Length: 448
Image (cartoon, rainbow, N blue to C red; front, side, top):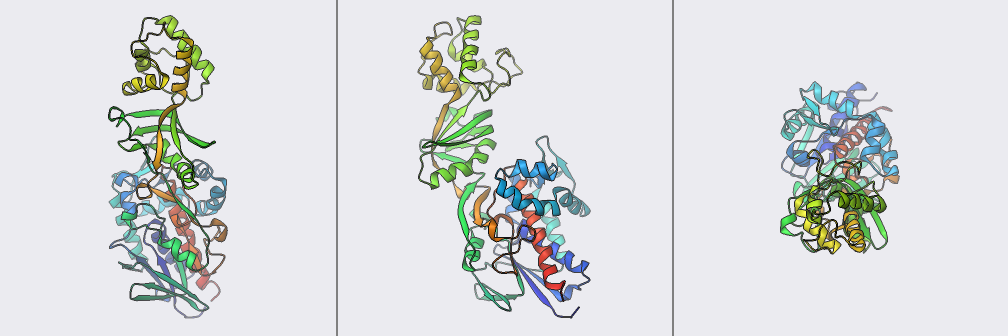
């Protein structure tokens, strides 16, 4: 092995960038390469690294998801192409590997009932502190306030320009993140840089974002949560849906089901379609069964007002024979009773026994397709992640190496994937960053 010195430059000191730096140093040391022979430079446009980690999970840092790799991929990434691309990286550096690494630095974690993994302290700052310590122990040169504006590729290496500063490197890892939460510094720089050296960029769309309506929800509905319903986006003949909780906000909707569906909604809007959001309050039960249920309730409580029936009605029940008066069952929020009746065309004073067939069918229709609003916007600056980015077909999934420039690597949210809410996106960033860093170091030294 020769005594040449090489420089690995990593653009972006977020989750994927920091793990790439740590992994590169570890791989080099495993090859018995002394630290002085591999200079690792981590460039960050912000005053300090890890801004997006600091706000992840509401500031509590949802690190990853507790599941075997197969289940993690299936739950976290709904597109088969994304599952296939990420499979090797997450197998190579899994959620278990991540927790072992962090555990060595004293991080204690807890798994919540929904599978999400958080620091026991509930502090994202604790995760950032240990990542910074790992970066420091990896003898990485961290340069902050350096926004990479231009990349030059040559036969002998790369030159990166950040303002008046110029950085030369033998290999480069782009780990600049996506284009969501611009206030955190992720404004799509990596897409522009990758495109400038020949990579194809899939259109950037918000994912895990709220939906803003053309007409804001009524004040009495704001703050109300519809639990475990089916949220449906309809767009000029196309549709998509998600099951889960939905929160009514002063601008539209949010909550887990909305966040998961937002990528599809943004895609519909980008293609020029008009999107309407509705809620199925009885998913799993067809209109015939729901109509029969209402008839049974009318027979049992004929003098009860329809409005009262709705207020006591089970919401998204597994079975329809459960007593509607059960205090243990989740019921339709009171605030929604009047809205359901309005959409069904039923007067407030109508009783169950006086419901006409047309009114009953109207009620069934409203319960199965309750219109929540027409979508005006899915805000990218409020999205937890962005979809789109560097085309997966141009990146080797086993190494994160560019198929266009062999000493260029791309990892993290810069790539064209987007996971569900629940720690999946951070895990993918950690895993792809780890693979990119390890392979970049080995590529520079294994054949020396």
